[in-house]
Length: 274
Image: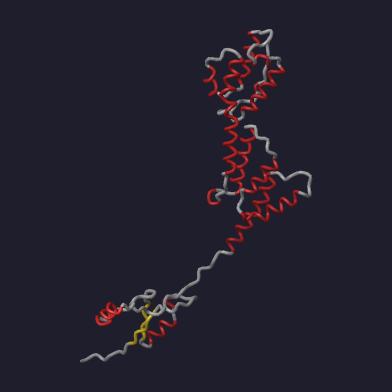
């Protein structure tokens, strides 16, 4: 009995069995159409070796090459099917749980990628979950995507959700990403406009708008013979030996300069002796 198969219609089992549930259902349905699904059981009625080999060949044609190493001892379609079921059926739930965990931990790090990059990573993870058997509605995925975005998108997200109540269909992920990209670009332009301006600061008179070398007060003081030295904040005054002794005896604290940033030293020019 010949069974013409169209290889382009075969759903392949992916490496690691991420789409095992989808693959198992598609394979069972196809074998049922061909009248070969009974060979997936232990003791099929009216057993024919040619049909058994045909069923086993169909199953093997839909496998990833790495899966063939598990089937070295399988001689029938049933043994092939059971080997794959034991290997992947228990892992499908664990794999789906792992994908859920990855989805909940997904974050957009703006310094490492754009909004489009984050949306692409989210979409790839969503597709993996669907292939692993997840049945979450599309709208729930989109809401989860918006919940993972920074708080600066909150207003835009509320507008999108409000507008979705006025139409029969929930907006697609592509539409949401386009709307948020426009918001992201406009916010980026506003941030560039609002960048803080560096203000010049004079270390001599503590005034803004000019630097030390352009300070009018410094030039005026130097013309009058007044030198102003900038000192550290609250430096301790040197004590004479007598005051130092009295401080130790009486337990007085060392006096400090009042909160000022400078001191004035006045000098008078002297005539040189000839």
